[in-house]
Length: 191
Image 1: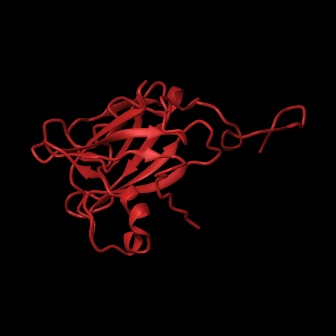
Image 2 (image 1 turned 90 degrees about the vertical axis):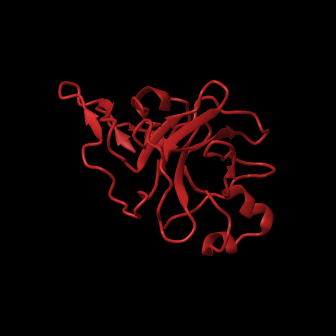
């Protein structure tokens, strides 16, 4: 909680509900984790859906992943800042960053352009969801393959399926995120 000059306690953003993410969080080319035109580029895309299965047009998703070589550090300086305002100018267009931030469009759709993750075990991309009605963001994973994995193995088959992206044509993976209701995505809790 923050305190204003009159001594009244004001709610902080995690204690208020509102679709105000689109103003400051997205940055130019936040969806372009891999350099444009990279021959190994894959696309992870899908919809963010509410409890009734309706698309959420103002969600913001953050993605983190290992580089193809398995490293987790990303590329320093890959997100350039405006020296005057301190805001983001965008990516430099040549470095793999391991991080992306994407707002859903008017139809609740998102797309991320990246390289295959090289983490140990099954390849996955970590996802953080910000959306209206959520007091706190949610974490999940988009697995790019199904197989033996401690997290997946701990889930019943129908819940497991909510974490596995479906391979499509031309190196695309479909991963829908359902916030609640039938087919709700498995969300992870961190201590």
